[in-house]
Image (cartoon, rainbow, N blue to C red; front, side, top):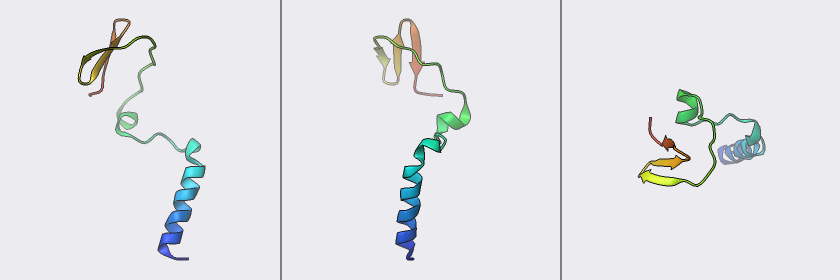
Length: 60
């Protein structure tokens, strides 16, 4: 088996089982996820929204 074929097999296997893989990104590694909020969003600035008086910013 060539290196390319082995890589393709590994990628296919990972995609088939991606539902069982943890969500690996910086926010999931450094802290808990906030509870979801629903409603109409208002943009406050470039990385902050407000929904029903609750603000969420995409920054640490």
